[in-house]
Length: 303
Ligand SMILES: C[S@@+](CC[C@H](N)C(=O)[O-])C[C@H]1O[C@@H](n2cnc3c(N)ncnc32)[C@H](O)[C@@H]1O
Image (tube, rainbow, N blue to C red; front, side, top):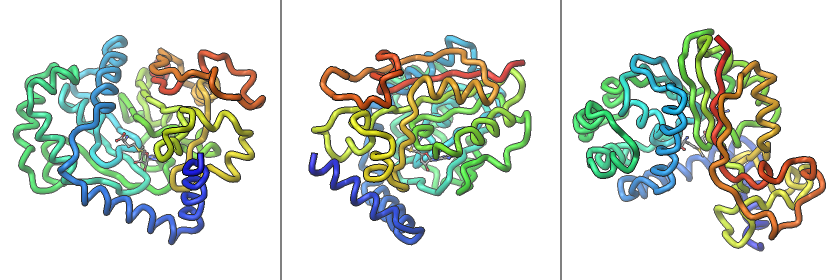
């Protein structure tokens, strides 16, 4: 508990101004570089790749030649890399800051040349294996992007201003939308909707847990449910690891407001709410939604 509040305080200090926020990110990038190639592909990436492809295959979303974009592409462009292993596609990698780690990217690509790992990931296309073998010894992100058909964009606004209308078949993000600023969500989703071609799809895997739990495993998965939104935002939320605390019905509303048709909602992981006193603010939410810790959404722009 002490480290839960302590971390909230530290992250609030790191959020004080642009300088402290930049220093926090700089230190984060340094840590990634230092641990670099030593880290293996995390197990949760492997699990989430399987569920990513399972959902996409249920609805015939994966088609060769697609134009796609990964939002919040992060340090190694994981979902974009997975999709590129399965199909040839043009890919935009979009993020609000450059937190890439080339050493880690290359180490992960090397791991992806292992047929046993590919089977665990649910990868089926042998061309993808040959592609990974070709880029395993590449010397820079730019050289790898040339071979993969990737284009990297950093845009601090996070509002996708440069993406042309009706230009993309598929937009996807994992572990990102929980970090969208609450006030920006209507604009982000309406820009996402515009960027998609009619009939195009949007995929979000969203982690609904309290991210301060990363630093204090003794607290509940969804510890923030104990507090009013006002209290959490004032004392525990912060600008460097912000979470918006939207729940499944809130997301459904936001998707519908932007014009999306909800194709599937898959509640992947649940947490036990019997061990936590949930604040009255959340009383209107159905337990099966409120207990959900990880959810996948597939949305469609009507044709
Ligand atoms: C937890 S990381 C996940 C990164 C990557 N998807 C992965 O799982 O490896 C969240 C990412 O979302 C990005 N992000 C936050 N807000 C964003 C926004 N409005 N638009 C695009 N990316 C955003 C962050 O910069 C960060 O790279």
